[in-house]
Amino acid sequence: MTVLPDDGLPLAAEFPDATHEQWQHLVEGVLRKSGREVSGAAAEDALSTTLEDGLRTRPLYTARDTAPDPGLPGFAPYVRGGRPEGATAGGWDVRQRHAALAEGAVLADLENGVTSLWLVLGEGGIPVADLGRTLDGVHLDLAPVVLEAGRETEAAAEALLRRYEETGTDPKAVRGNLGADPLGHEARTGTPLDFAPFAALAARCAGTHPGLRALTVDALPYHEAGGSAAQELGASLATGVAYLRELTQAGLGVEAAAGQLEFRYAATADQFLTIAKLRAARRLWARVAEVCGAPEAGAQAQHVVTSPVMMTRRDPWVNMLRTTVATLAAGVGGADSVTVLPFDHALGLPDAFARRIARNTSTILVEESHLARVIDPAGGSWYVERLTDELAEAAWSFFRTVERDGGLAAVLRSGRLRTDLATTWAERSKRLARRREPITGVSEFPLLSEKPVERTPAPEPPSGGLPRVRRDEAYEELRARSDAHLAATGARPRIFLATLGSPAAYTARSTFAANLFQAGGIEPVTGGRFEDSGATEAVLCSSDALYAEEAERTAESLRAAGARHVFLAGRPGDHSGIDSYVFAGCDAIDVLSATLDRMGVS
Image (cartoon, rainbow, N blue to C red; front, side):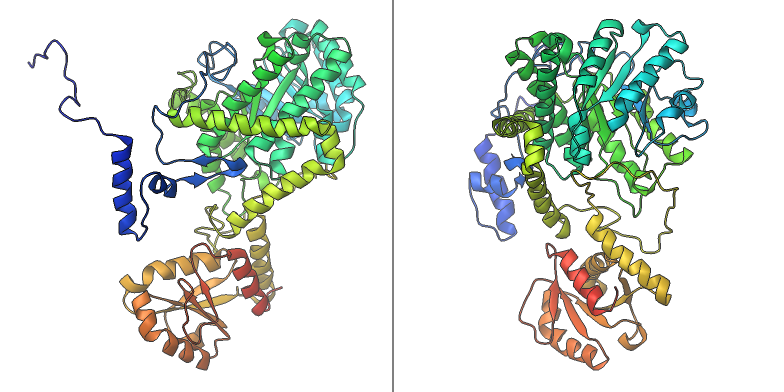
């Protein structure tokens, strides 16, 4: 048996402390090998990543990266959670979304892990008249119900309150949200709604149903219009402040008014940004409550939804991985309720399998991964704390510009907010087009032979306001052109990969080229002769050394065989006979669209 000395066994006792400058020096050496001569802080900057909102993540964070004290859960500024116990008692609330009346689907969810219901009613959802049928068999004192009914919110709220009375549900046992969100509705449709009926609902809930909220501050319209994390947070703050003003003018106190709000945010597969966003949202709302003179009312109730923007229609199975990471981030970030959109959400109404996978995602993370055992497990991370602080500052700055311009309703009606979101989305679209932001299964590693997943079309959601964007939309248009060509001719457009030299010389670039062209629905053909490939264009794939020796001669041979356009996979050079180049960082959308045009694929 080994006996430790009295002072234990310090594992690093014999190692001298390393400095940040020494680490930077090592980074310099690594970069020098790749041909980049930088030193000191510039070496660290070379490995940094630029995010939206002017944020920048560095490759290393240390104790020097200070951030404000996040406090403790249940205490202002609520960065570490709005409740002192967090989700340790039983995990977060698993909230399933239903936008269509499907026989037995609601009860199947509640009997298999779902703990609350999110019902989309009226336009784009279940008819308000069918709310009773939807809730048949549901124990309303056990299962919270959250509504989303747009311009039919008042009727839907009355129907739900009437249902509580008819079933004899104790008003004090009721939990959920009536879902009034007039600014969110205006963002979606362009049509304003009178706030007075919703103020009356809030007063009624505060007076008779203490566990029932009346209003949702939904940030999804801004996220789905292409907004950044800071814009999403800033718009939600402006919405929350507008509702506080309306409710207090209607006679509610600030604490009572704040207690009527639930905030809804998107969780993406960008794990750390989502964690920081939820933590920053709580800090920001705590600041609003403090300024309003009610710091004790600053604990923000958060409903988090996996991002519709990130969901793809091609290779939709990958969406299960995206939503798993997003759900993990939502849980670590301290969400009170989490909705996992089914993997086939972008295709239409989800089937039973998709709903089961969606609800089981939370179950596995809570019950098997034990994600909820520790409150704010990311707290104390130098990176997460710094990112939370920087994102909060960026969001507060955006919020202040909205308030300066008259508030959220004013910037919606003036078009300023639409312009801001469109500018952000345009910049992101450039990264998507250049595959700097890859989409697995779509812009990277697409599977042309994939059998399409078909679903019953979902009801058309409300429209007329801010647009709804998707990350895959530009690539989806290209794939749709290829599909139409396949249906009309029996074959997809093809491109011939002319590989030069040994597999060691050409494999990296032939794999790159095959992935690139398949992202546009163009089938790569390798081996054999160009004349037998069925292609009209070709791409040379090899090493720089072989290009210098053989590219011009091979391009000439391909043209003689009938190639109308010859690409070279590699950085642009001055090779004779090469029409264009494809390389990492090139505009894939432009390349693929132009290629389909030349091939006559409409």
